[in-house]
Length: 549
Image (cartoon, rainbow, N blue to C red; front, side, top):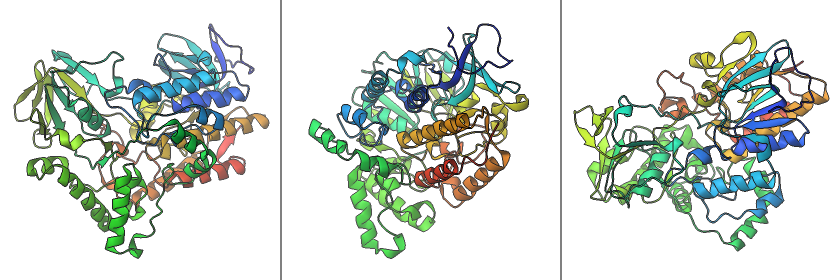
């Protein structure tokens, strides 16, 4: 298969090669939109994805209970009011099947699938300096020669699947939540182990609890949780949201985390304890991430403020555990503050532990040592016999997807090797030394973790498209972030992060879940609104710091 590019092939191209103006890796939320925008420019562009269909994270993460925790009215594409109004979500926080269906609806409405190659894993991408183009190879041996390479791989798309020694010896079934099979898994009456109690593990646990024969949950890091309020949406409800399309579109681009809510309660110091309590109660009842991302920003900087908010949540959780001291000690965090980890929404998660057929294992007291044929062996020598093991153990976030591709820039420098030493980017949009490589959802941008993903991914796609358009209009063929720009951004990113409590907590936000990963906050915490303004200013000024030739 080949495509006729409008651009001349460089001297690195030879043999049976597909020539493109632009190549997109990934067909999820960002990849679909990036394909659409570049195609609208008139470029010869193609997207490639390992999956057999569109959806990205919503293709792979089809585990029981998977659903997003951004409200349906703002987890949307904003380039078309007609597209927005044409799809009607069934509830405030739709589940994975509906989200995958929505992304297929978008792809079909825009006729995108004809320009997507599925079941294709990208193995390598090498920059050819004499042509200023990328030579990309797939695992099946195909070669693509492209001027621009845009990564829309996703920030949570490199699952940590081989987590424990002995996994291959297990006589039952092992499932990683990020690699869940399409065929349903039968939990009915089975002895099930769930390893991990982050947002994903919580969704699995609360969903399969009614059907399992027994459940053993291996708890290492307990989570602060917020009860989800998830009303159904009628046609009339969605028509009402449709009338607010333009207001919502503007709002999400200005707020701290790309949602339609922000820190509007006013300064903590100007409120009485009763007024603060009232704000927290109101946000708690909302049943959304507003409790985390729209209460008091001081919570992220001031340990005393954070402790007050943390204690508020602990009390709420303790009430639900019915004064079971053993469960309260195990499931309610005390060694880190609310909001410094990813905060999950849940439905009756804590109540699961009150079931007689559910037990929790304290992995701080007795860590998992290995998987054995019968089940899971912990450090105290006990073997927990089970039929099914669910690994909700997370991802090599932010950097993992690109690090698993052999990406080589100028002078054959290896991105994997560089990021093993230090994770750096220029605003999460480019990496110095890798010309014409653009990234979405990459480290050091809000989209790496701290943003409503549709908001921040679309903003990055729009910026990347604008930059490519600018280069073409000025007769430029190569775009590369300068070292000075990258240095300045890394310094600003680190200075901003250092003011917060987030960097004092071990979590996947800091890369702490991957052995040997350099410690740095993966996501820019200066706010999505601030980041968007900075990006817009750079574009308005002619992209200073992004060198073009």
